Length: 462
Ligand SMILES: Cc1cc2nc3c(=O)[nH]c(=O)nc-3n(C[C@H](O)[C@H](O)[C@H](O)COP(=O)(O)OP(=O)(O)OC[C@H]3O[C@@H](n4cnc5c(N)ncnc54)[C@H](O)[C@@H]3O)c2cc1C
Image 1: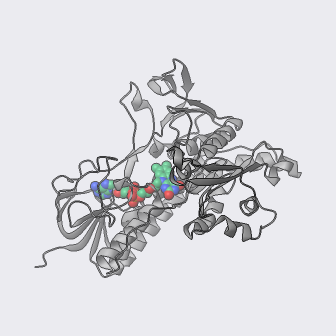
Image 2 (image 1 turned 90 degrees about the vertical axis):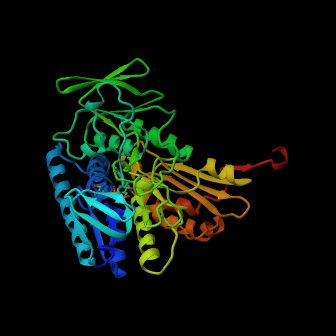
């Protein structure tokens, strides 16, 4: 009898787990994947994809408003939330089917159940079965955090429930200043809700470039969203269908929905990690891994959100692929986590890659900043009061473009392409040598000639 039932057991059928399972099976491994909810994981079922569908739907309000300046007369429009949710659900079910089929086609077997570790090679399924695996990949993702158990927290929803609301709330209060909070604030506002964002810090989008943070805040406020910083919700009361959020600054806000989007925690609880000898990273609460995504148990690896490194779908996918190539494909590869482009699908959206100005100034002795903000050509006709921000951060010593930050329509699409140049270590001179594509907003990236700021660190003074 074979020592192991499978070569690889993957816990979690999300972005990272699915990629690892398919690639490992392609390398000839006998693979089993356990998924306790729906194949596709957070990104497909209650993350990136349904979120983007909601963003696209809500952005149509801007298109409609902009049309008049171009001569269109549009009769009064109406919006039907249940139609949006039903069509989104149909698309998500289609994608879930594709994920399932692709895994099965690769030769891996899916078990639709929860799996936990009994020891470093044994999995116990919720069905009662046990499976012996030569290697285990933990790809259990993350879940929304709801913070401290404040009175009335049970009345608040997370992003998980926001995708299934029976009706569009007229007034929404969202606690959080990160990308998920802002994306939902703009989604609800776009569909016509009255939205208030509550954030404990001094400004939204902590960790992003300071210019991006202030630009997004200004644009969201101009679009009618109220942003209250330096305070938190301390208590939530319910009166029938209405809620009152009591804030730490002594004020209170009535709403039809209170949502918390204050961060996510890695799914490490009740997985049997201790019995299998897997250590937790004390700095972030995720599974501790080395550069190969190997845990402290030699037969067990972990990838994606459960490691709490960089919680993005393409990162989980890349880590899953690298793991499978390394362990089953005789192609050792470590993931380079530098220069990962990222977006915030707020309205207007953010696209960013590389270092912020603050990070660059801490790292390099001379930093040149090229920054512009301007009215997009469309606004000259639509009359919309909005501006695009573009910013390049350059290492003055090598002339390398080490950061690019854009706020404005299609910023994410632009930054995906710029990320290639940044990854290839393009210099500002390379940007300057590139022809402008006219008339576009992105042409500003290759036509900014003079630095708007130059920072030279006085090494002698340090
Ligand atoms: C609202 C929202 C919007 C987002 N938007 C973006 C975006 O625009 N771009 C982007 O790159 N990223 C985005 N993300 C992040 C992205 O979804 C995650 O980084 C990504 O899904 C992580 O993949 P993963 O494989 O690590 O985990 P997941 O995709 O979460 O998959 C983990 C799976 O494991 C299953 N599972 C857990 N425990 C067990 C168990 N014991 N047994 C069996 N199954 C188990 C879960 O049910 C889940 O399906 C968003 C996330 C959210 C919540």
